[in-house]
Image (cartoon, rainbow, N blue to C red):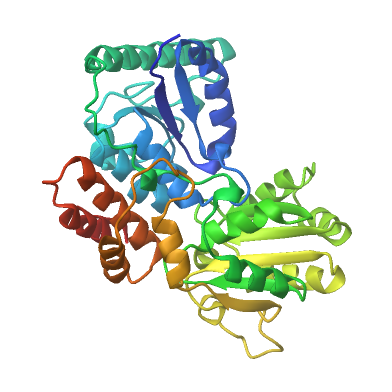
Amino acid sequence: MHSHPVRVFVSYSHADAVHLEAVLDYLKGLEQDGVEFWTDRNLRAGDPWDDAIKQQIAACDVALVLVSQGFLDSQYCKDIEIRSFLAGSKVLVPVILSACEWERHDWLTSRQFLPGGQKTVEEHYRDQGDRKRLFLEIRKHLREQIERLRTERPKPPPESQPETAIPPNPFGQVIKDPTLFVGRQKELSRLRALLQRGSVALLGEPKIGKSALLWQLAQSWPDEVIGPVNFELVDGLDDYYRDLADRLKLEASDWRTIRKALRERRLLLLLDELDKAPGRGFDGEALARLRAVSGQNPGFQVIAVSRNPLKRIFPDSGLGSPVYSFLQPFTVGVLDESDARGLLAHPWAPEGSTFDAATSDQLLLLSERHPFKLQRAAFHRYEAFSDPGRDWLAAWQQDMEHML
């Protein structure tokens, strides 16, 4: 077993889930050789999905990209995932699943891809034997890339550390243990109180901590939690209903079947990136269906997360009450000073070095207690402990330009 695993991020469109399963099933044997595969299916209910995906992209060595027209048309796949792979100089292994305009994309035309030429998996490998031979070729090609990476990796230096070695930077971690989550207790209490009276619209600017708050609530919620359903990853209304049916463990994905399950169960449904919903086919009528179920089943609640007010996402038709009227608005703001200082104390990593009072004050002022800005400022300032000449402020400003 290799001491340093090679991490493979699998990028795909949800519409190609069948191909994903088939490819991974043929590649899983590589896990015995120290290869770790990651897809968004590894996300758990309530995970801050966008941050988690970007962190997995940053940590991966290879990107296995399953290409279709749906993938190429996906703004997230194209503008976030592919752009991040290229910026991070990751090894790309594209596989053309079906007919698509791959020639229009430089990142594909400039690279070797499989099956090669004008062939696609769907059109030219319908025979099971032919398809297995293709998957074997993909496996061999991926193994070649992995072995090349391993030979190019620098050998670790001899084990010797200075006496004043700085503990690892605690601000680059994703906190998964709910007992180590810092702050937001007032917001959590308010959110739980609102849920006692119905459903909630969780509002706030980008990276203000909405998804993290949602994740922490999901870990402690007493009833069943479904989601989050992320509309940035949804490919149309049918895909939304299929996703919902899968999470509810239903055989059929029609609305009648889903509605019956929602009427009969006590559960909390989490909807993330609702701003994207209308563009993915989830319109006012689809939201009105959830409103009707919530009126019929007091045990069914919804938390819908968005950046913008719902009246901007679902304009009022003027006929009856607005479709979003069942969602009580709750806006997530910056951290209060106590929570912000608690974050800087990094209780999830007590062995780490701490900031003095003057540095903490500087970080709070710089970030205006915005949780993401504060965490990134703390990360770069902490790096300066081991590299005093580092221009940590310039590094933080670059983060703000590219990540917000």
